[in-house]
Length: 108
Ligand SMILES: [Zn+2]
Image 1 (cartoon, rainbow, N blue to C red):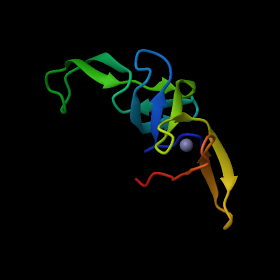
Image 2 (image 1 turned 45 degrees about the horizontal axis):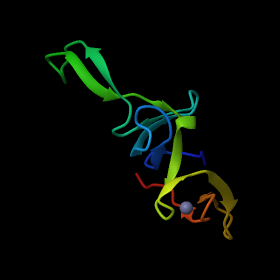
Image 3 (image 1 turned 135 degrees about the vertical axis):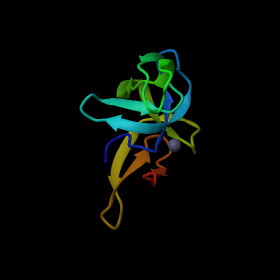
Image 4 (image 1 turned 180 degrees about the horizontal axis):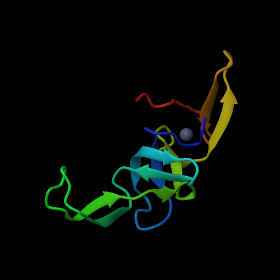
């Protein structure tokens, strides 16, 4: 499993939104970027569309680089590195590098 997957909570460690946590809305593995809820808002100048008949300036989240986000461990209460281990039954899982807590794959 990738370090960060959709549905995870991550901590932003660089940029204007440093210190914020948010839910991962999408992962772009090729670009090593993640889209995080409520983080890195940019103003988009959009044309009128069916969904937005007025068009104009809309604030949307933009993806941030994976290196600027850390997986957030709710047990430690901080961002952490991720370690991969294999459980007794052979399933691969992610664990917190600090407290060794298993970080569940988010159900979505
Ligand atoms: Zn932890």
